[in-house]
Image (cartoon, rainbow, N blue to C red; front, side):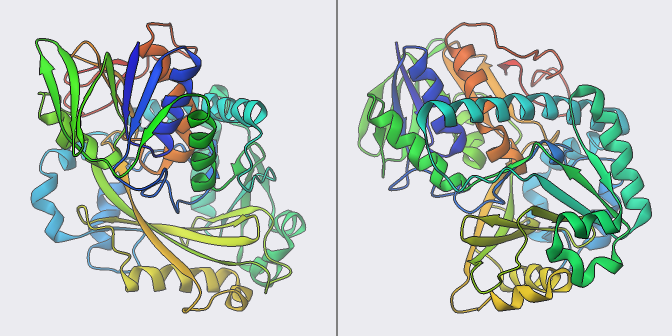
Length: 431
């Protein structure tokens, strides 16, 4: 059985890995010259079940309106994007009810925990090294109301498997001394011990090499132009370098998945939301954080990845432009410096590596996984800011569905596309 996977990001390579384990002959097609060179390249680096809440949540529409025109806003809607989100936008708004938020967060948590387990098993199996950190995540708060809301959401997810601990300001600084300089401003924190940190780019490249050595074919610098359909099957993938015949096709092209799928009548609502990261050497700051820190009020993460620090944040709805906007970059740096003044030791405009990538966001905040209405066409895309977190679990589930196996986790809470106006996601069937 020959399965062609389109896309060599975290989702695509993980899907290929599990398909190969299930006995498929696998070919991966990627337009870039290597694996993980787009959205998987410079992301926030955290594998976190602690951040499974979708962006489509109660109160978010009013926040987006309030943030219009603010370059330092956590989520910025560019007005030029409005004509392009005429379907995605209303579906996003429809998912901002309390009931939809709870259901979508619970579905994400189920997949995130399964994905963490799958990642740990891959690590054990392959010996891949990718700057792993296992000290967990601290999410810090200055606003008591925000902390209370976060505590309520975590308590809601605790029966579904979320483990967390609430810390006082003194406990925060005791656990992470790098917070001492501004710790007096905190009202508390939530600690998530199971969350991990790792360089997604390194992991995906190493996993691709591991599978290539075991027979998976990777075709880089090759663009997909169309899917060749015959009846209710895809018989080949047309590429910039010719046709590749396939028994099955998995589309894992992130934000670029909808355009290709529309050619064969499959409709998925995914919109690119730009994220930004700034990576600097950690060495100049001896007392730099050893935990991943998420600052709730200032909406950034500061994550130690091996000998580097990565500051990440920003959500910009601006179409397919992946250029990091200087004002957005500076806003993140300013916020980091407010919490960690010593970050100035590490940051230099000339040496900092600034990156932006397009997160593929579904209106529900839950990714599309499974079979489309075309019998041998499958999708694994739309996991938004949780792509790195979900990659191994989603790849495993989609591979099991392709192979006709029963998935290991319950997918009953994942609504099917086209049967709801919410633009929600897939459990085995799309379309």
